[in-house]
Image (cartoon, helix red, strand yellow):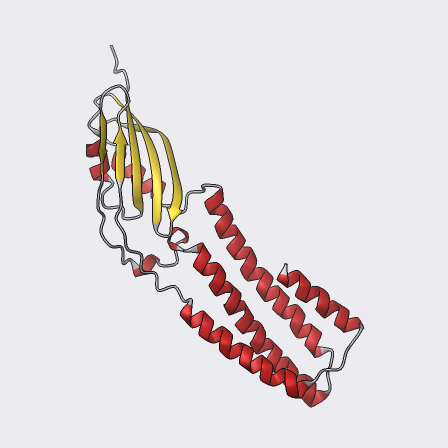
Length: 227
């Protein structure tokens, strides 16, 4: 909405130029840039996620087994930009001030050029560029937040890793559902078909090296063997 408003005002000023008080506008633009840079620094994501992971299992028709598994602290900085590790609330605040900072730089450059060459049209043009910057970052944030709301799998490689660990000795996954429950935390429900079912804890131990899994429910159904 802010991007659309900036674009509307910029287009209007292209066709209806107004005088610009450069001596007042430039210092205010510099002050805004300093405030936005300081805010962006305070809101930077250090990507330190601490917590305990919990796994729960359920065996249909055989046994019920619930247990907590502590995966410890996750300091995997190589994957800090993975979607499931982002705090979208913090990211939205950061995108806000970062976009403002970029726009402030554009505004300062535009004001100096407009004053030097008397190009009043440059101010609305810079406004349109700023609107594109804000809209681009906002769209990225909307897509990331929408993926969480739609329970999309946050890590495309995670289902394959789970499948590789569980589909052994003839066991087959009949249903697998993963969804993000917080920054760096994924919950999952796994349904297995097995001719020789094991306890849920046995299957969960195979997934213990996947730190992103914080809550796992395992369901095992007996698959009739050949007669």
